[in-house]
Length: 331
Ligand SMILES: [Zn+2]
Ligand SMILES: [Zn+2]
Ligand SMILES: [Zn+2]
Image (cartoon, rainbow, N blue to C red; front, side, top):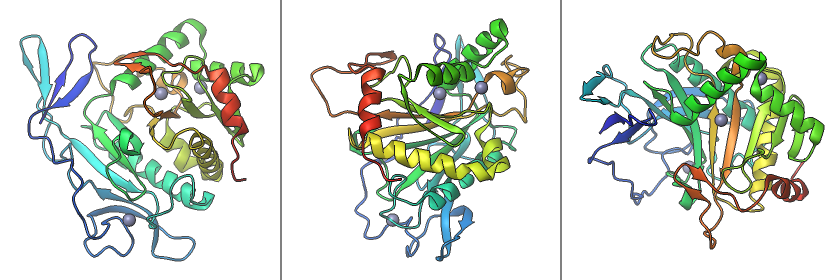
């Protein structure tokens, strides 16, 4: 496996022929459950606050796409660029229990999971080789869910993923002309218009974006400006529980429409170790704003709603928000 850069979009893709076997193994026991006889290699554990030995933990991915050892060894091949897939690939076990998901766990459990995620991102950013740490969750067969146990995944890479790079550049450009954060401006306009806001909770807002890529796309953002999720998560722990509650409630709403979704956390890149090739670092703390994006996957309808990078959504966000607001969720 190797990383190759698309010279046109400047995005890196991981490619190669020794694709790890993704067919589900017939496992007799779950390796992520608290009482697993063959537990995965533990990286970090959040102690339990409610009895039991732990509440969330990070483990090494059993079949990692990225490997921690060595240097990326970036090299040119004519106009192309390639490098070795150096990185970290971890599984974040959200809950010791096999049946407690982010929409069915309690807010304290979700809070512990979010703090673990913040700790792992912070820790991986200490490695100067890593430019970015992604956290994501794929739930459901059509989302490419890998494990039955409630888990998210963490990938530290030697490059910034394409979508985040777009956002960083757009944030920088908006800030250059207006001296304001585009995300902060979106939040204040959405609150004022109140047409696409799902709900607010404490310092957080859940909304359907003005130009969705897929039906019922939902974002969760802090209403107070902050570029880095991990700085927020470790510094203002009092409000992490509100974020957990809003995440749980938003997922409950989305699950009244479909069970399958992608969830991704967008946070600032590794500014502990600055990159010379990217020139957005000076204002990044002012012009980027962390957030969670949830991209539901609707059962195949007559029309496909994504076509590569050109998104088509047959449900407007104003319609989507009506349905999501009316969904019955637990307090
Ligand atoms: Zn399990
Ligand atoms: Zn902002
Ligand atoms: Zn984003």
